Image (spheres, rainbow, N blue to C red):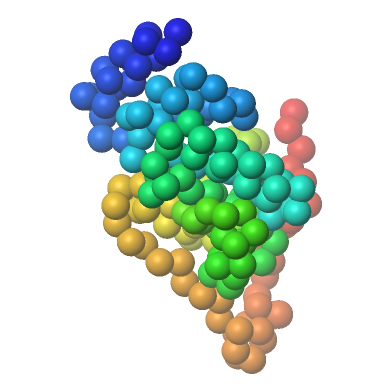
Length: 171
């Protein structure tokens, strides 16, 4: 019930600096209870047009349920280009909400992590994007470096050994 959920969140907030709640895609009375206690509420979306439309609707539903404008933000997930080069303002116009983080699509790193061979490396682009998001949650600005598109960097990438990018088989 909303009252029990409200009590649970109050209990957690007294004991932890940050509490993360993964809500279902339906905006309901539980969402209202979470909204009451939240500094931030994130809608996670991929950059495909249909997903952006769903995110736009979800942001409007949160607004209708009383979530503060400053709390409603979007995490743009599985972006194919370098996150630092994404036109955030254009996506914000389409969705009608602020973007909190842009996470790259890095299946190789994710598959290694799922297979248990390693956690997401903080040296990977995805790891750096996770750090940027974590910093944002903690109130610290950790900017994501822009890619080096110089000719020398292109040559270095061309002749450096590559990690395998084929899917990792899980037994």
